[in-house]
Image (cartoon, rainbow, N blue to C red; front, side, top):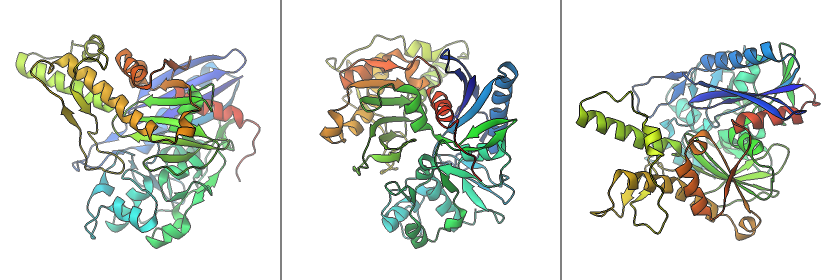
Length: 442
C-alpha cells in the first residue's frame, strides 16, 4: 500500500508516494507560482487557491497510478496565515513567513513585532502569523467576514476533506506565535493583553489524527515543515544534528525535555518531545542573491543575454578552500535576524589579493554555515555532547557540494543525507503512516 506526502514550500510544492513494504519512493516537484505582486517592498503574499490547485494536481496524478493509497500527509511553510470565512473559503491572500509588515513602526515608536514581544513576554518575530494579524488589526486589513485564521497547510487539509473550520497541530500552532510550548496551548492571557480575539484561532489537535477523506483517502493533520524535514531525514532521533537549507535555513536537534534558551526556538515535535531550533532567514536565498549579482554583472559588461549560462553550475564548480586560506568573511544576514530585523549582511577581511569571485563564493557559503553553527553553539553542553550525527536536507544543500564541504568543515564531522528526496514531504508521509489508525476529528 502507498502513502502520499505533500510539502507546500515557498518556491515549490513537492509530493512523494511511498510504500513501506518495498521502501520505494517516487517524488515530484512543481514550482510554486502562486506569488502575488505587491508594490509594498515588505509584503510577501501568495494565492492560497492556486496552492490548493497544485496540491490537488499532485495527489490526483499519484492516485491515477497508485490504487492502494491509504493516507495523505501534508506539511509546508510555517508561520504564515490567511483568513477564512464561516464556509472555510479563503478571503485573503496567504501572508507568508517572509512578510515584513510587523517590522514596520507601531505608534509607540517600536515595531509591531517588538511591541507584541514586550507586551506578552513571547518572542513574536515578523512573519509569524499573529504578528502579521496584529498589524492587520491596527491597519484595517482584517476582512469583515473573517471566522478563523489558519496556516496554508491547515487550509489545504480543510479544503481537501470538505471541512469548514481549520484544525492545526501543535507544531503549526506554535509557529503562529503567542503559544505556550510547554503547555501546548495558545497563551490566551497574553492574547487578551494585546487585544487579539482567541476565537479566531484554529482548534488544536494531535498531529497523527485524520481530519477526513479526500476521494476516500484519509487526510491527516498537517505538521510544520521543520519537524517534517527532521522526521524525513534522521534515523537516530536523539543523536542527530539536522541542518536544512532551502530559501531559509535551520539547525535542529531533538530534546525530550522542554528548554528555554536565548536565541533558540523550542518547538513541539510530533509524537512528543521538542525540537531546539536555530532559524536563519537567509539560507539558499543568500546564494541565489550572489548568483543574481554575477548574472547582472556579466550582462552589464558583456552586453549579451545570459540565458545560456548556468550560473549555479559555474558557481558550484569552483575549488573549495578550507579555513586555512585567507578569505573574505561574509555575514549572510541579508534579511536580518528574527530578533534584529534591521541588521544586514556584510563582507569583511577583504584584501588586495583575496577579493575574487571564487573567494566570494566560498566565503558566502561559509557564512551560511557559520550562522547555523553559532546557533548550535548556543545549546547547552549537555545537549551538544549527545549529538554525533550530522544530517542534511533541502535542495539548496543537496545540490551544492561546496556547501556540504563547508558544513563538514564547520561541524568537524561527515555530512550524511537521507536516501530519499524531498525530506519534508517524506516526513509528512511518515506522519500519515503513524496516524493511519487514528480517529477522525469531529
